[in-house]
Image (cartoon, rainbow, N blue to C red):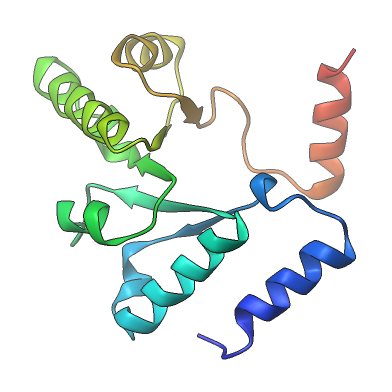
Length: 153
């Protein structure tokens, strides 16, 4: 909401030589309850810089399909509530969301993956990425550095 937000982001990218394509800003629907027009304009400016925009927790609360049309998104994060709905209905909902997102050229991240069975289902349904305890629990920067170093060998 700060008036100089985009300029600050652009300066940080330049100062640290970070390619904008490596950065994604993640939003939740609650962030749109304030000044929607201002936020959407800021998101468009981020996209003009080459930064990605992800909509988190999609499918719960007041999420609306029209947001997929109105927002300059690059990624859709399907809320973990869907993965907890076992059976054909849950899979049909996830599969439909994945297909819709792919038709809109969005990358799909499915949240809440905790078991290899859930991972197999999500892979079958076409999710591009996963997030959840199956990969790792939340961790500090120091622990993340060790985690990544252990896996780079």
